[in-house]
Length: 462
View 1: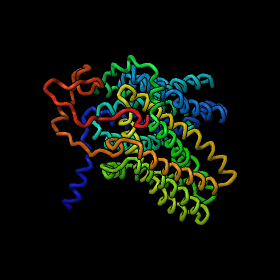
View 2: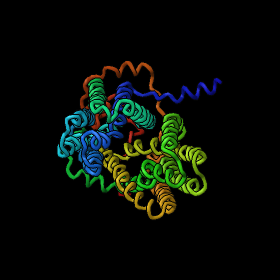
View 3: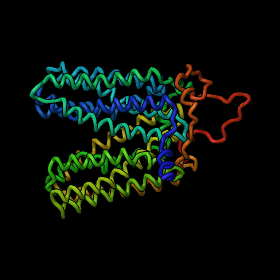
């Protein structure tokens, strides 16, 4: 029992208090997304009586802006700072979603979708950049793992709350829905006033051709491409194509689909921190390859279930399949963002995080489009093809891993923060360019330079 107790205590991330405030705000943000996003089409179609096609295009427009908007937001992060950009994104999200109760015409919905979409595009790059700036290299794996947990918890409970509030029989219930959603964004915005602002690099303010410098980092560009493949063939297919496939080919009812994704959420919440700890000291690209291999196993298993099982037995089997997929998600979630933070030069961190966001959004745009077409033409061929794509991505990760320096290739061990640090960081004084969190910080005259820099920027092959 002592060994178990010690292991459980070892899973507790030792993070600065400002990071915990950001994680708390992340729960509010995810809760708001879960409250509204699943019900937005229903609101526009059944309450405002827009055509189903128009309603779907509004939501697609809102979510799709990020493909172009996130890299631009990353540039803003590098120019004015991550916290300021994050606060602006939350204000836009609150204004955009908060205005939907007043929509009466489609053009108004598109206008609000533009506002909320701009906020959504800026959120992930600024949020990820701020986490990276406020943590050491050793703390980032735990910090991003906690973000995965809070995102899943928040979105899951948000969907439950939204389902309890919203009803088309009482249209005003959707007004409550949007008001609560806007309130969650404003709550996160309030918490950010207690988080220290990290000044942008002086280099970033003078930087020209920033995206050209990013494009010369071949390792990062290939990582983006492989990630987009993994998202399109794995994440997007499970999220959007698995439900209709299971319904049509394995006689799984809607309640069974809900239970399968409930298992997904539970596994993500329970397993994320243990997996983040387990990969410490292990090669990151090998872990990404394992993710691709497990996604491929998931896709092949879905074909087997669809061809041989039906009803409740198919639900049980698919729950087992989703556990494998969820564990792979945990591995990917613990590796991807910290790896990108280490690859990025400080003055380009926002751009790197913005392009990472776009690679995910591109995968979620392409994946369901191709998946729905293939589901009609060849259901089994769809999943076999996805398995092959995930397998190729795994091979690509292994090849890419041989091109990066050892200090980036391996996940660092967790850094333990003394408890007194929590009190010190609660009131962080205004920082200047000579303070530790500044990207241009210089060691004091009586301080030896750090022999292990927080990151090695640029491409090793450039």
